[in-house]
Structures are given as C-alpha cells and as structure tokens.
Length: 125
Image (cartoon, rainbow, N blue to C red; front, side, top):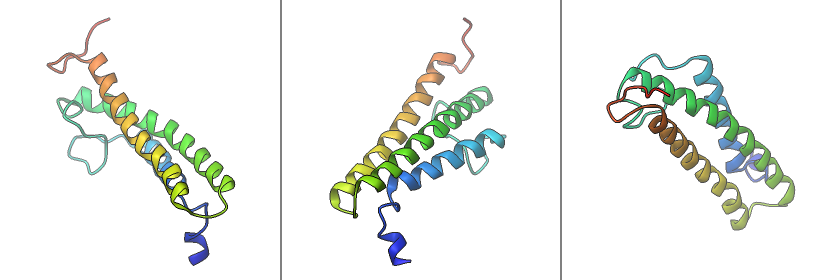
C-alpha cells in the first residue's frame, strides 16, 4: 500500500481527472431531476429555475468530461516525467486541478448568462 501512495502515479491530476470524468458521465447519464438531489452543479444562477438548472448541469457535465480527460493525460505525463514525489511534483499536479475547477465554474456561469436573461428566461436569438 505504501508503494502505491508514494508512487508518482498517485497524483492529484490523475485522481481528480478520474473524479471529473466519472461525475461528467454520471450527470450526463443520470441528470439531477431537481435542485433537491444530492448531486449536480449548484450556484446562484443555476438554481434560479428549472430550465437554468438543467442547462447548468448539462454544461458542467460536458466540461467535466473534457477536463477529466485532460487531467488524466496530464497526470500520467507527470507520473512518467517525475521519478518521485517532490514539492514541485505536488505543485505541478495540483495546479491543473484548481484551474480546472475554476474553469468549469466560470464556463458554466458564462454559458448561463449567455442563454438566460437576469430574470431566468431563455433569451431568443
């Protein structure tokens, strides 16, 4: 067990990538039916109404799958490049995870603001 935890393949990017990918596919396959479910993308904008809730979860699941794939690839690359876990290794694998979370939230909020007006009504094109 110690060898697994100390392996460079046990890194933040790889583990978070698996979580992102799994949640993206899970939310796509089983979209949360209401704001009261235990999972789903929650923010002030996404909980305004049902249409925004579904749109937000659709966008978040899409981005989550893409980012999960990229994080897994990056995590494997770091595991191959580094020979052992160091402080630099930690920063190189945790930084993409933080950036991915921020990007997913920012992208989803931006898409909601593009699709819906301030009252939560879908804008016409």
